[in-house]
Image 1 (tube, protein in one colour):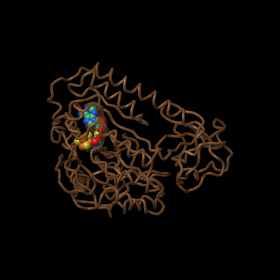
Image 2 (cartoon, rainbow, N blue to C red):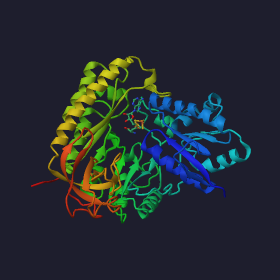
Image 3 (spheres, rainbow, N blue to C red):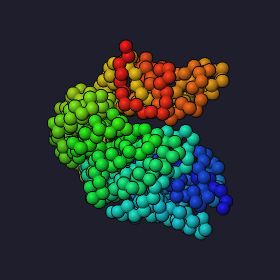
Image 4 (tube, protein in one colour):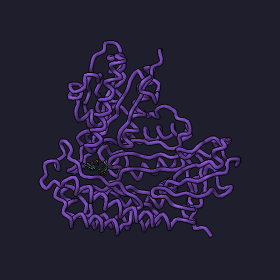
Amino acid sequence: MTSKLLHISTIGCQMNVYDANQISGVLAPLGYRGTDSIDTADMVVVNTCTIREKAEQKAFSFLGRLAKIKSAKPALIIAVGGCVAQQEGEAILKRMPHVDLVFGTHAIFRLPDMVRRIESSRCRIVDVRLSDRIDVDRPMTGPQTDGQVSAFITIMRGCDNYCTYCVVPHVRGREASRHPDRILEEIRLHVQRGVREVTLLGQNVNSYGNKEGLCTFAELLERVNAVDGLGRIRFTTSHPKDLSEDLIQSFGRLEKLCRHIHLPVQSGNDEILRRMNRRYTRRAYIDKIARLRTVCPDIAITSDFIVGFPGESDRQFKATLDLIEKVRFDGLFAFMYSDRPNAPAAGYSGKLNESVKKERLQALLDLQATITRQKYNSLIGHIFRVLVDGPSRGTSADPHSPASPQIRWSGRSSANHIIHFSVPDRHPLNNELLTGNFADIMIEGAHAHSLWGRLIDDSMDDRPGKGETTIAA
Ligand code: SAM
Ligand code: SF4
């Protein structure tokens, strides 16, 4: 079989990163091997996102640039996948004559057939069929990457929540969960390759297995916790309305479960939450945070916010700022509201202009930056157990380079802090042994989005460890 080169360009969330791995996996038997270079590729897949208008524009502008490359190399196959493909379907082929294939979010396992047909007859294909069930559930890990320490595992797809601003239910289809046995097989395959940490993905992992009567999410976590060789478990995303007491208790019970929860709240005002169809109140959200902190006092809590939802008044926005001050999040993502096709809020009155949205976004980010700074500064002198990802980006990994008397490494704490640390260049640990191991790091300083510190001698091994924030003497 001739070897062909495949370039995948991924825009968007972790689910798209996971899907990119699946795409490489299903195309490997056709002879496709990954490449970082578009110029040498025989096939380019653009894996798109449409959660906000900007992401969609990014996909189209990238696709536009490919036209020139295709005209210089007519044999190149250009495929568009992901959420924009699902949303726009045939319209993409009409608008972009250089595109050969549009495949939707449920079509990944049908890709090999379609690509074979294009290779043999240069036809153009659209497949945006959605299905209510997961028709093919094959444990797959994608291509082996050197030193890969963490992996994403999609445990369910789609969403049934229909938040009024959101396009996901329309482009990812109805909620459907994978069988726990397949999920566990996939995790074991990753662990055999050296992965130490998995992040379980779903739009609302709290409702995992409900429809199919498989098992609860807390039960699934228990099974994943028992996988030999796995060090850490993370998950995202949790919908506050479905965060069960059972799952809250898991943070106290499961030693591999990281002390971090991403719990998007979107707004601190009840009327806005009602119009977003979030189905919880501000009070209920605060109560759940209190329960989490009772069960796991050092749990890190992060969230998502939308500013400038249609009709959001100044007073309602202030309630959001007030919630941030009350909860004191460890981090957050904030987005300016953006109209999405098929999402009911696109038809709501009271749209805010861009300058108001920008001002609110900045006020929110400034407030969180102050909280993060205060929190980070209070961590100086603490010791964190870190899973080492590898050398810090932008620094030399060559221990003999005269330009790098210290090698900078980075990793994450259980609470998901990014932590950089240095090891003297001639230190015996400065080889690949560091990556994928756990080490204790004493925090010595803080940047805006990360911490830095020094390695505690003899603390490095393959044990995830329990304690996180031992206070230094
Ligand atoms: N399923 C998750 C949840 O319920 O929070 C997250 C889904 S979405 C991929 C990630 C984030 O994008 C959301 O939490 C929300 O803050 C933001 N988002 C979704 N639709 C948006 C829109 N139309 N405009 C701005 N932000 C949006
Ligand atoms: Fe979108 Fe809401 Fe579903 Fe999250 S829960 S994916 S925000 S509809």
